[in-house]
Length: 359
Image (cartoon, rainbow, N blue to C red; front, side):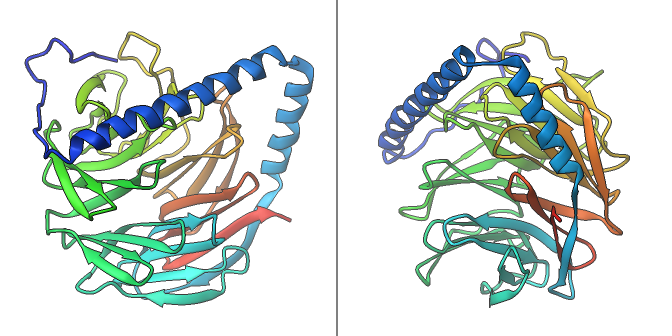
């Protein structure tokens, strides 16, 4: 991990006055979450029992191995590009390149309704949370925010590759083909600023569990870390010998707050440790033979799920980064989302959503 604090490549992006109270709010929010996380970690350490922990992990890994395909639902005549699960309404949103979002029961895959944002030809990403707040972004370069059936559209930018929701659910971030990522206030639906730094299109984003940092991945093969409380680029993960050699398509933070997983077009699944001073990944996981499109940690923090264009869903243990099991689909997978520790759904080139769960 390299620090850019004394570098000539620092990127200062001025923002409006409205940004100052938001940054102050982020500082307060993230400090409280960090305190809670560290207190929970301390309690877990003081009550840690090696035998019971090992038994619990082995039992869970056996459960993961018992997962199988439980259902499949064809939705569209185009690829299903993105999935988002709303745990408050227990509903799955599936976005398609046909310009529609399909809302499904995640357990039966029954279609509840269909939403078609105006002017969108290909939806690249979708967010779905809270009381039916649905946000879409597409190749046309604008973001549509649907709150309580009131639709607001952001100013047109460039092609949006992905969206990321902040843990406070009042901010979103958009990765753009114009080499920037955009900081958007959901209260006003305004883009507060567009952050430069990468030398290629920004393709993936991930917010730290505390809400303090944002990781951005790019077609330039780099991963950059940004302090959302100050706007400073605090470090970068760039390793010409051991890092990514292709576009970084997916990022995911582990719940401990110091492990970041990255995956990309080169088929590499890498684990980075924020505590390390070197640029070398903590682990390189041989999980896929080609492009990895999506990675997610399970809520219990015991498993890292990854899916890719080889049609494989891979499960990796987070205590050792060892292989647990894998599942094989017949076509390229574009997205993956777990809805609990024993159930996940995928979407892809076969125009369907697939449900995997315990028998």
